[in-house]
Length: 293
Picture (cartoon, rainbow, N blue to C red):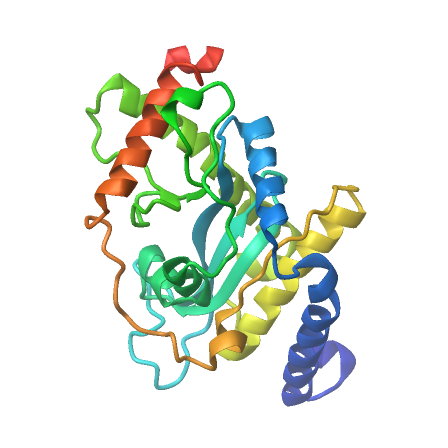
């Protein structure tokens, strides 16, 4: 359509889109997605504690399938469980719906847990190189001791000391049900951010008929423009968003595997911390409206 409107070739349009998207990313990255510091993680945790009543939470993580045209000679790599071809946008969002971490370009056939495992962000989690704050005591529950700072995710992600997921099953005890509700309440910010992104940019509502690399560039541009609009237009306070981009940091495809990060091999330490959070939410950390859960 663009090529027809401006009387230029399709190849020219494709090149212009790719170059402009890359220029947007490069120009806005230092101001709207710089590498985080320890104080930035603490600021994110304060936001989740204040707005969503989940202390020591440094972000909500989830994956979004961006539907693309079937790439040539790609087999089933990009074919996802929804029956479409896609690349994965893995994102961490803060309490104000800002993208703090984005990793774009994972194969559509990979699960969210697998996308995390294969990303540079996941590698940073495993290596402990993301400059997280040291464990801190939650105000009002000093008797429980220091608690780790952690992301929140759904059942597709593994349970780790720095990544909390819900208790599995339907018929769980009330204390675990309350924990699941409180975690889901904090985690919904990433779902809302994806919804805002889709409503702002029409490309998310159709099949993107470009190569995976060009689609990746466009997705990254929309994510950073999303942050730009929220920080400038809505005048949100900026506290150094984060971005880890697997393609640029580690080379094209070097982290792209098809392995799945197992969700059933959590350490005893991670299980213990989830239990401590669960007890806190049902006792001194309870909120009035959770009585209906």
